Image (cartoon, rainbow, N blue to C red):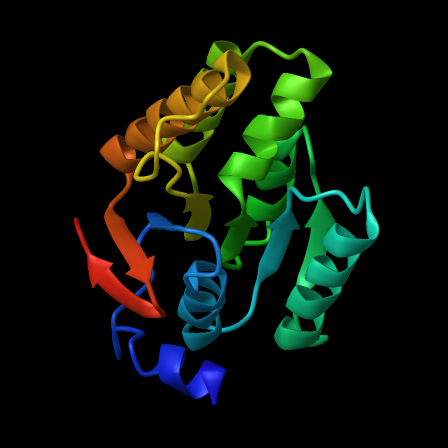
Length: 183
């Protein structure tokens, strides 16, 4: 039932544009909506940024994989997202990136240059040769985090989302399984 409800909201007959950003909160339905956008155009590559570091995350990843089925080619890229996109775009099939906020978290933990990595991602997306749908969490609509680390992450995620949205051809916000096109 969940899949049917979300798939009803996929724009029928709308071609995938070069860059589509899908934003939403936790459990909003954003990943499934993004998967359905790609599936409507024929399955492609799934670039996963999550790492199964604990049993809860492993279960979450397993649920996503079961929902997608075997027709997706999955590439794990917790840090080297631009390299993964660059390799996959050569095949010309649609690409789904899930998700930017986990990628950002991984970059922070690895001590990578967030601004440099963001610039590289934006350059890659501006020259993309296949449709790419990018999923990201909207983390700025809640209460102000109580500690500096969480506030800084929220701010970096918001700036990353703004930068990708600025170059995206289409942007959706998903809440309660219902997407709203913002751009």
